[in-house]
Length: 129
Image (cartoon, rainbow, N blue to C red; front, side, top):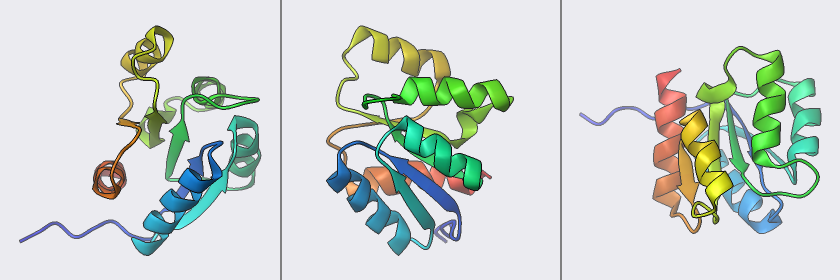
């Protein structure tokens, strides 16, 4: 029997490419989650101060405050934000990005990714909570 999907979680999608953030929001909303978006890490921090999120799906490279900086900022205030992060990147080949992803061990969606890729990784994180 297939495992029932996790539903009703709060998800924050952070990406400076508005169309990608909007698409991820639509997919995850259709899966039964409450989804907000932010266009960079600064906007994400403001939203995180307003409410808690079960999952943060975050681009690595963004203006103002990038994904690694957002992760480190949250780590200052939380013992381990790792279990709530999924990163997205089109630059996994970049040495600094690869080192960061290896250091955190966080799941990473490599752009371009499929709808099924997004659903699988978010379900894996949210279903384990």
